Structure formats: C-alpha cells, structure tokens
Image (cartoon, rainbow, N blue to C red; front, side, top):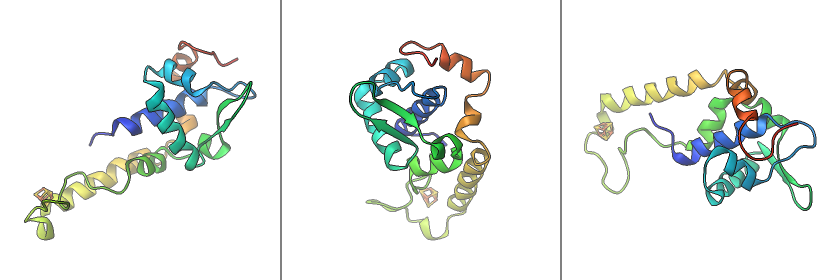
Length: 147
Ligand code: SF4
C-alpha cells in the first residue's frame, strides 16, 4: 500500500508543527520550506487539516499555524484514513469495473491487508511521531525554529 503524496505531505506538516509549542507559530510557507515541498501544495494540505480540526491558523501579524489539542493527540491511523478516503487498494469498480469484482478472493485479501495497515497505525498518536530520533531532526530543519 502506498500513501498519496497529499497524505504524506499533510503528515509532514503535522509532524513539523508538533515540535512547536506555546505562541511560536510558523507560517504555511515556513512549514513548506522546512519540509521540502511547494508552498501551494502545502496550503492545500493545511486547508484539509484545518477542516479535520487537526490544526488552526491565526491570520495577521504574528499569526501562523498550530496543532490543536485534538491534532496533537490524534491517532495516526484515523488521520491517514481521513486523508486517504475510503477507496480500495485496487480499482475494482469505476468506469471500467473488473469482471471479478463480485467474487474475487484477491479483493477480500486486499481489504484485509488494508485493514491491517491501518490497524498498525491506530495506536500511534501524532505526538508519538515526534519522539526521538525524529523530533530532534524536525527541530533542526531550516526555517523558523521552535523555541
Ligand atoms: S482482480 Fe479482484 S482485486 Fe483485482 S480489480 Fe478485479 S476484483 Fe479487484
């Protein structure tokens, strides 16, 4: 199973923000720069994360992005499910439906595998993702540094 680029980018944003605490709030551009992605792509991920209640954005001078309490404690499995959507691993339905789709053992095995993939991520929280060795690397990235 492979994450979409969008999901990966959103997870990078969440991890970067998880090492900021208090009033220190980086901008979308700063998060994008630190995580090595285009600011326009990051802006789309930030919008989606806001809608999920994972982060909040303050406008104006001194404004920026911050994880919400929900975001910091969110299950990574939940977050990845939300970002990936409910699609299946294989394209069984759609414009050219597969003729085996109603009775395919591979399809059911792939569903089980997808469930196991998410189940492995469920116990992890966003805060867990930034414990060592990841946290210190995130803190040292370019752009505004967490204080
Ligand atoms: S072979 Fe099975 S898993 Fe593959 S597309 Fe067809 S129904 Fe889906």
